[in-house]
Amino acid sequence: MTQGPPDPLGNDPMVKVTRQLSKREADWKRQGEPPVGRRLAQIGVLGWIVVAPILIGLAAGRWLDSHFATGVFWTAPLLMIGAVLGAWSAWRWIGRA
Image: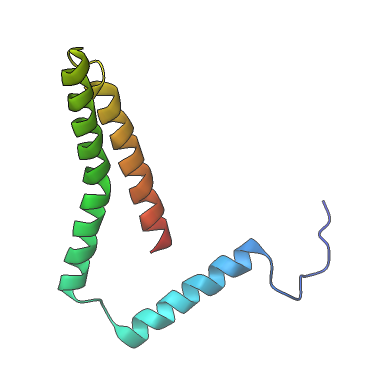
């Protein structure tokens, strides 16, 4: 397998990742560790990103079940959908950081 000439614009994904990592390392050396309060705030935000959709699904499911008298027919699936949405949102939020 032959490779073409090097990309002068640096569009190679490996080059982009390497530059991003070196920039993060330079920023870390210049700024140091973030304060403990900021880390705790990030953990809190991450927790609410996961918990909020779960609670919304739970509340909506309980309301539908009480309205239609269906036991846990709506509560269980909406709880699981909320958990999946919360985990997906957290995954995306972590990926942006």
